[in-house]
Figure 1 (cartoon, rainbow, N blue to C red):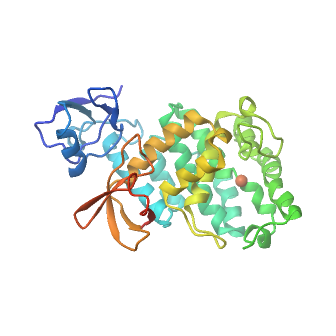
Figure 2: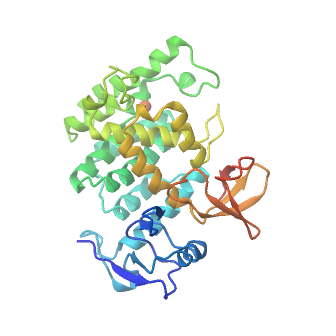
Figure 3: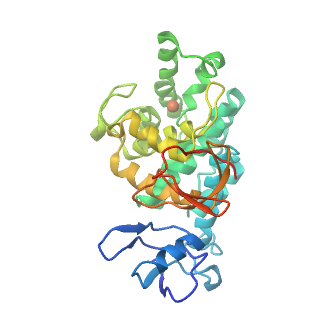
Length: 346
Ligand SMILES: [Fe+2]
C-alpha cells in the first residue's frame, strides 16, 4: 500500500511531489499528481484556497516500493524518471544498461533472458536508430503501464514487447530505413512488412507469450482501423500494442532523424491531435500526456525567438502551453501565440 502524508501549506513544500491532483474550490484541476513542487508551483498553491496537499514520503523516511530494490523509494524514482525523460527530450538517449535502472525505478525487472538482449543486439548491428528507439519506447511504455495500473507481470511483458516491437526491421534494407525523402509505394510496402516479419521472428523466441508476439504484430494498428498490417480496429488490438503505438509515435516525433528535426514534447502532443487522436486509445493518451509533461518542469528550453528559459509550470488543463521563465519574466505560452518551445536543451 502506498503511504502518503498530508502537509499544510504553512510548511515549505518546494521539492516535494504531489501524490494526487490538486483542485481549486470550484473543482477545477490546478496541479497534476506526480508534479514536483518548485518555487513557482508553491507560490501558485499559496494563492489558492487550498490549505493541504498530499505528498509522497521523503527518502529520509525510508519508504520502499520495490521488494527487489528495498533502498528505492517512490519519490526518488519519480525524480529519476524526470531526469530520464529530460535526457530523452534532449535527444541524448540512454543505453540498454541503464534500462535496467529505469525499469527498477518503475519497480520492474526486464527479463534478463539473453534471447531478448541478443535479439535487440541484432537490431543494433543493423540500425542504431531503431535500437535506441526501441529502448526509448520501452521506457515510455513502462511509464504508461505503471500509470494505467498494469501488474508487474504484465509490465514485464510490455517491456519485452516494446524492446522487440521493431525487430522485423532487421529485414528491411538500410537504404530504405534511412531514406531522406518520401518512401515510394513499393518501399512503404517493404517497411510495413516489419510487423509480420517481427511476429514470425518472435515465434523463435521461446520465452515470449502470445500476447507479446501479438503486440509486435499489431503495434502499427490504429483504433479506427487505419493501421497495418491487418487494419484491425481497437477492440481487437491488445493493451500492449495500444500502449506501444503511443510510445512509438511519441518517441519518433521527439527524435531527430536524417530526414527531420525533432519536435519538442509539446509540439509532439499537438501533432497527435493533428494526426487524429481517434487513431489511438484516448484514455491512455490522456493519462500519458497529463503525466509526461510534468517531467519537463524545470527543464531549460530554447524558444523560437532564440531566447533560453526554464519551464516553471504546466497547467493540467493547458498541457501544450507551459509557463516559461525567461530572465525573470514569466511567459504563459498558452496565451502568447507568437512564442513556442523549439527544443528542450537540458
Ligand atoms: Fe514499427
